[in-house]
Image (tube, rainbow, N blue to C red):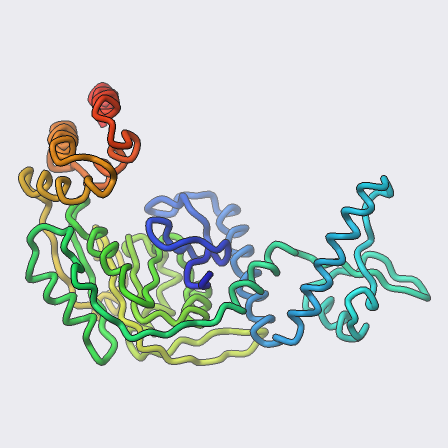
Length: 364
């Protein structure tokens, strides 16, 4: 399970479930969530960065923590079964660890002391879930492969041959490059990112859930050859520093346990957004910008006929879904909504008609 696909962390699969770094899902454009909620989310993210950094700094702690968590879980289960109440955790001899080392972990806020007497000290792991996640992520060996372009890359996308060519040049580039796909909704931007996510060593993220520390940690652990950022115009202005440095020099400074460690990457960055002019000009200047026009009705239907059979629809049903969704939304029609209709219908035309009828009624 590569750490390239994690919530910073809850490990997640790649597309269609994107990597989110720090703030969790659901943040809308403009970041209108209450300030206190944002501060809590950021605190949670910073704690994750801190724990990952500690285990990177002290890999010799991992087997001790694993044994400690196993003992702690077994004792909690035993106390519950026997009705003893809450377990105090474990002692140094339970996990075969030097007491002084356990006290260092207390100072590092990985362990808590639950009881201390003249003859004994009981410890408890502070956040077992986070530690297990970090241990799994950091112990997975990273397999490096040469980037190979799939023979059918971009085959699901109708037209736009010039953009496909430029993206292939960027994939093959020997030096760092940044490409920004800019245009209205339903103009193939995300489809291009989904295709790029098929490349070896690619990492897909949503900008509105990406913070600077989270991105730095993801780069350090996953070492992606290709970084794919969707909805980049929702990137918080306070979080552009790491991305700007990555594009400008390839150097990223990661803070681990109070130490600033510069690391250099050769990552290519592909981003997509509707209104990227919201971003700082110095960041925008790092990209070559490719502008998209909205689909015509004919293009919209042709793309649906190409994509929806992958969701169990025959060609006739795919065309029907495309025409009906276009009739509801016109130029605002979105391929992704057609995909959702197909997935709900599971290849059943009668289900498609029920769903379309409901969408017509709601006007969406």
